[in-house]
Amino acid sequence: MRILCYGSLNIDMVFKVPHFVEAGETLSSSSMTRSAGGKGANQAAALAKAGCETYMAGKVGRDGRFLVDILEGFSVDCANVLVTDNPSGQAIIQLSDSNQNAIILLPGENRNIAREEIDSVLAKFSAGDWIVLQNEINLIGYIMEKAAEKGMRICFNPAPFDDTISSLPLSLVDLLIVNEIEGAGLAGCKGSYEEIIGKLSELYPGQEIIMTAGSKGAYYRGREGFIYQPIIDYPVVDTTAAGDTFIGYYLASCIRGLSVKESLYYASKASGIAVSRPGAMQSVPVKDEIFTEEV
Ligand code: RIB
Image (spheres, rainbow, N blue to C red):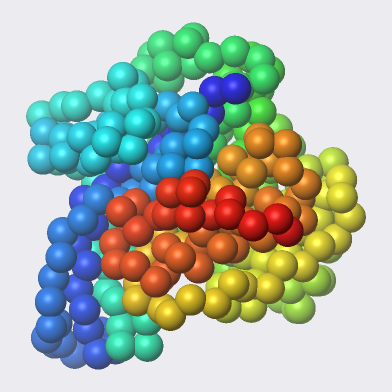
């Protein structure tokens, strides 16, 4: 089975700061590292490292060519990543002493994708293949409609959450994965995590829904009922791409034929290991580190 990740590729600039910069404040950082990221590319890296036949589609400038090289090093097929003369997407990431992150995006070529480019990518995929989408590229609604017409299965991670999400054809989604902010935004309510995921499953009946809640674990509602998965604790170094790692390993585990409970466990383990390492896609563990014990 093939998995197409149609999404962002970003040059991440990670500034280590004592706390997030506040209004009117000028703050010195103790270090800055340039690394490979973008929610789309991170999820593609996680899927490939988990052992899936993974294809990346998107757009970068020549300044981001190294992102493609890194993904190819993880065995991601990048034939559908267009390289142009315009600037790539970038992310300025503040990483605080309390191991939180805050991200500012510059979309660059990620939001410069044309309908004809999408048509030509999707022509290579067929019914039963998965497509994995996030909210860092343009024309997501169009991609969802065209992929659903072909009978592809859709995994959607509405990150970052904004006003455009509610106008997307979300009824076409098979697997919806949100964090607590995206979950509350989509559900249109505040409340306990159980209440939010309950509301989401009322709004999107028949879908598999997962809400990750950082150190509070992950919640599932879908064909296997309600399942809670606590985090699997590792020392925290850098939380960037924790959610992306979770998504890649959850879907990869389901595709291996594992149950939801098992898939949640392995996704949490992979995400825990990713936060114990610096960087985004580079921090994602490989499958031999994950599928080592029975759940
Ligand atoms: O999810 C983490 C990612 O979000 C970073 O790699 C950054 O590029 C932003 O897209």
